[in-house]
Image (cartoon, rainbow, N blue to C red; front, side, top):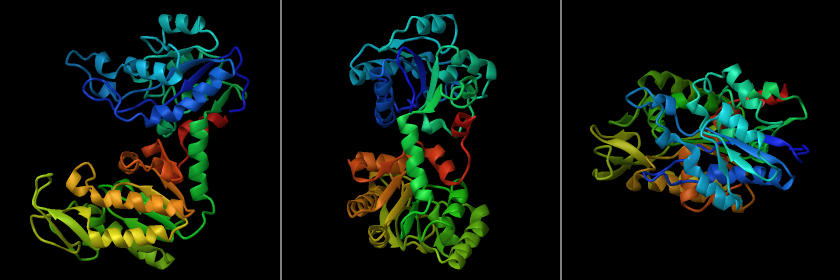
Length: 400
């Protein structure tokens, strides 16, 4: 972010898409905290900051009369939090673009912060509307993209807008730079042994990542619901566990490919099984290949926890994407928690660890281990696509 910000109006696209409770209080402020260094740097350098972000999917959850639910999705909910963190009074604009937005941006002074209304209140935002992008760009002298979480979307405020700023008037923010740097550290000549921990519900969501990891990892640990599709491919009895029947052939191919390339695949030897998808269900621990009818695997068992932990602790580079079980239900959270501890332990011994993907990030944060891993990514889908080798629109747009 090597720009001269003094007396400049700087539009910073941040990712403030944070979870809120019923009283509109922030329940996880990771994404906002991660963007603060960029904002503070611009203010310190004598710039005026115009913040843009989305919050939720307001166009998908319209009110009965077809209008946007402003009360639910307004960024005004974040103002008091920003006031405290930035130690100044953040101005709020009730629109993203328009007469009021132009007026408020025009009178904004150096050292001040203006938060614009939710970008997704504008229908053209998610469609990458060039007119909307141009109107947004007219508010500022410089454009900083610090929203890694939406870098995989070609939206008006995340990609299209960059076309209206010449080289030398646009840059990535500190968060974006860190995300790219840490992902590249994992992708480019990582120190072995390299272990990837891949979890989550569906194989279909992680096909491209698993393909990419075949050329990168020495060990691939597979947990979560997706493990049972692999178990079924190996001829196991998976009971009522989540299995993608149409992906069994693919799982067989991936296992064969790993064997050919000398990549060791670890599947959970045992599972915590339940007779229903509920916290109150009856629970047992059984071999993952022998789950009886009417029962389903909802977490990795103690044998799998030990085996996976041993592999992780011996690794020098670790990627963790996705939980080991139904982490949001307490009886099925132990597997994910154990993996989080193992990743932290390996990091303390000198390993480089990258945690990316909603629930694995939540696990690390809940256990207070975020400071004990090398890097926690703020972008689930964006990080996944970056690691798959895709060119992200939000990154590509900045090089033009």
